[in-house]
Amino acid sequence: MTALGFLYPGHSGEDDYPRIEQLLGSDIRVDLVHTDIGEDAHRVDALREMGAPSRLAAGVEELRLAGADAVVWACTSGSFVHGWEGAQEQVRALAQAAGMPASSTSFAFVHAVREIGARRVAIGATYPDDVARLFADFLSAAGVETVDVVSSGVITAAEVGTWTEAEVLALARAADRPEAEAVLLPDTALHTAAHIPALEKELGKPVLTANQVTVWEGLRLADRRVNAPELGALFTREPVVQV
Image (cartoon, rainbow, N blue to C red; front, side):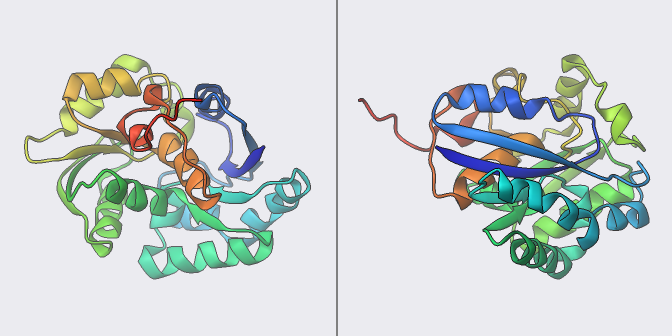
């Protein structure tokens, strides 16, 4: 059994995680601990506070006692708002507090983009434009070119958590550009786990979503590979092994 630990801020799109656990269809356990979100606002100051070391450390002990093999801070905006160096420091502090390999959703996106071999991406963000562009800056620091950023201007994670499949599809379509090799939807408050096949069929290219890449990053840290086509192109890189 491989146990993956996730620190998830507040309550919005967290039911993606048991759904993903079910779709993995193997001996993978997904353990999720909610952290204190503080002020629910897609503002830089509020997002920086949301990912403060004290807030993350508060949830680590529960994951350690559950026997997690790795931990991921399941928040994109609460990691990339610190910038590349700041996000690295955030992960280092988390790994030290947890005593296990650690990462965040922002780095999960970087590693997932590299995994699928994309160099140019488009971003469909629920955030206000200034926050969304910080994510593009973060990707740029990793050598990933963003061809366009579409922002929806939603202020709270609670509102994002109410979005329907039609709204998610509309955001992905609006963000897509012919030159983009993948479309990124960077908000763990957004329910996407059930929609990835439809998104990729609609756009004809890989779609990377926050909760999807977060779980994939946990698997990567735990040195596990799982073929799960219902979770999109990212989860089909590993050949299917006939038993």
